Image 1: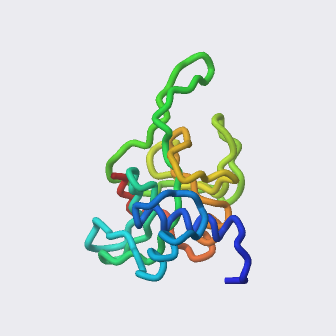
Image 2: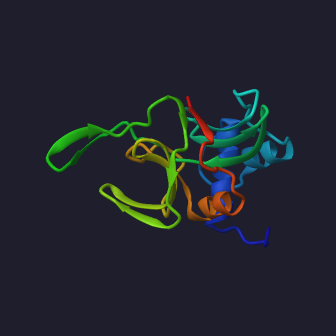
Length: 169
């Protein structure tokens, strides 16, 4: 904490608002302050081992160890809108299921659908990755976006090593 309300703080506020089920405006109004004071936290679904949970309904990415959430991040997943690429139409969705992180790139990846910061791929071309824009609603082509600073933290703390289990629900 540095006393500044910057984009990193706003990402944390979005995550808290999502966990509390309140309006996602990124500001600390009375309802957000109440959720903060009450220590509102999401609940994990997994009970054993280390896992990344991606909650599509609440747009949260959770780091879970033995059923206990250790970190919560704002995420933006597939928009469920149609888009075109190279003359074909696709649906931008994040598939539900259980996966494993199979590859990673430590740097920018210039992918056909845009730039991905330090991606951790868990389902073909779908990854958890950093992005300059992480709104509090589904907006990606299918990946789970987190802020660049969040992705840097995840790498620095080796929070999503290769072979980490990922549960998207």
